[in-house]
Length: 86
Image 1 (tube, rainbow, N blue to C red):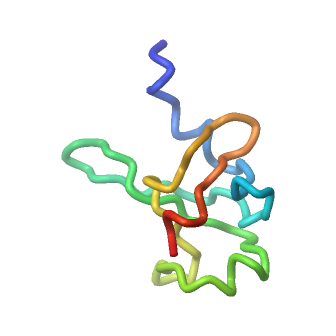
Image 2 (cartoon, rainbow, N blue to C red):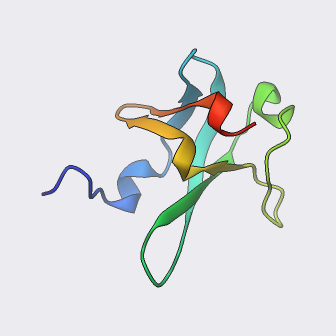
Image 3 (cartoon, rainbow, N blue to C red):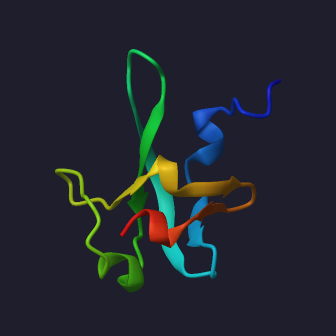
């Protein structure tokens, strides 16, 4: 299996953290472009107060959205570059 291609189920429930270790929350859902399959955003559940304090886009259900372009590493955690979001 190509390392670039991962099952979306592998991302759901993973903890999202910044490069400096600040916890944002857990992946609740994935938002992607249906025509291309490009992953656009991660919606979070259990967003931390730190994450809530950032002015990030939200879903209609008030879930915090993290742009997938800010993701720098996928592993045990999903690591994001905070400077890519603000």
